[in-house]
Length: 164
Image (cartoon, rainbow, N blue to C red; front, side, top):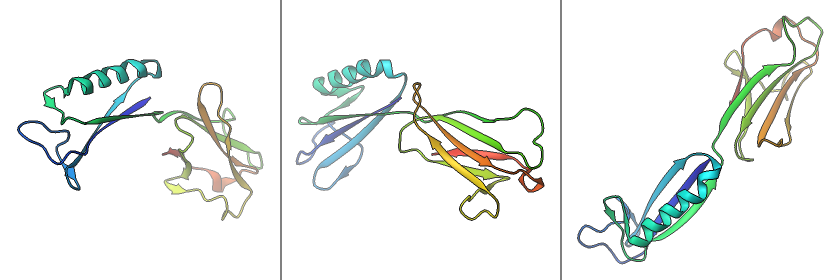
C-alpha cells in the first residue's frame, strides 16, 4: 500500500525559516509530497501522525507556513506475485499452453507479454494466440493470461510478463 500526502501552501510568501516545500510554483504556492509504503492496516495510523504534525505546524525539523493544507491519497503498491505455465515438463507440439501472470496493484495497471525480449503482439501474430485479463480475485490479485493454441518450435523461448 502506498500513502501519498501532499502539503500545499498558498500564502503570499515565506519568512524566516518557515517553508512548506523546498520549491515554490506560481505566486507563493509550494508543495511537498510524502510517500509511505506499508500494509493497508496501518493507513489510519500514518494518516493520523501526518495530521498531528500538520496541526503542530512542524514535520521533523521543517516548520510549515500557516495555512498549509494536507491532502491524502491511498494507492495500492504494485507487486508481481508469479508467472507460471499451465503444464509440467516440456510442451508438446500442437498442444495448447497458457502462461499466467499474477500481480497485486491498482485497476489501472497494465500487463505486457514479451518473448525473448520482444513484445508479443497477438493482434499481428500469424498463429492463433490470445491474451485475457481475469477479474480481480478475493486477494486483490489480477491475472493476465497469454495462450498459444497450437504450440510449435517457433514458440520456444523465454517469456516475460511486465506489469506497470
